[in-house]
Length: 552
Image (cartoon, rainbow, N blue to C red; front, side, top):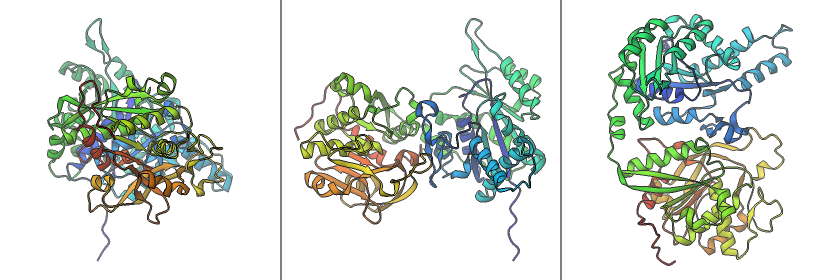
């Protein structure tokens, strides 16, 4: 029997214009949703122009959340949106940076792979970029590869990526490539009109790079008139039906439906000659239309180190939203800077009106005592508490201080000389010098212990789960027996029983911490079980300006 011949992969390249943060990532994720709804197989790739190898060592204030793939790649938060919207699991092949490209090219030169030739951006750097595109196509066997180019057209550091995607048109054939340009139409308040001139300039800049966009997605905060679409069609040389308006909506999860209504799904299928089924968006429509009780929101405090930039906890925020949708409630997040809890000490004022406390991940000792005080408040007042990675370590430290009657329990990350190192460096992390890409990263198996809160959340039959990790420090087993005797339950363990992956508190409505990051596995129409359990517990708490807690 002859081998199955795969059809030529189609590539959709998405660039941005006028300003950054215009919504390319959500647009790419939404287009992937529409293509998948037509029965097409899709994969996605992000090309980031910065020279860091990955965002793993970057400050959250600089870059926002670091999203971790199943194979342990530390990536841009846009990969989280791709996974959530399209409901796929991506790998390291989907996250490409200039730092990776230049490192690879230089390593090849040092080995002598170029036979003494002069190494240049063209062709060597662009060839390496295109090779990464082909590798993803080969490994994924997807019918369509969506590629987002980070930054905006005109950025110096992005030019090699633009040249590479221009060359792809000749490499794989014009019929197998399509270019989408996402751009902003600014609103001028004094004249009460949207302006198209910035988009015209952005398209001209793209043309100077040799790329003519096939589709323009126009972002705006106000309705886009037919006259504006006609104008952009004429001056940007794009068919009118390919000028797609995308007005700001209440929820990012409405974007796929807005784009479908504007006809972009059928347009892409037609232009790329794809054989597809009619779109099936019933589940998505049902999810977006899910009735929400906005009169009784679930109030949750996220106590973190980087709360000034909400994107630092992007997946946490979205996972709480997903669970709220499933419970028919909105989730009202109060962003609490953990340092404020340390400096002010007025924890009652900051937390008394919330129904749940989340302590997310982070690194370093800044604000740690504030997080510990939040965990103490949740424990003493029987408020649902959810600790994510660092948040689990905080829970253990706080409980150990209570159980051992000492203020010494700590993590060796924050106090290397502590007399009670209840959290300590993983043995395999000792002696690690390089910070980038060396943590315990990606998927690991966890065995759920029956009869626990975790087992109830995952379902009694879910005795084994796989979750994504990003950490260097772990629960110190020297304290297992003492803390267990005091009421700490180890409800999730590594397959060999060596590592505590989930712990929870006995005789508390819902106080659970996990060493992994469940937020990376949550989906809008399939919330993560632990977030479902947490929000479900939080919504049961009465809230009338006070906390009528029962005594322990």
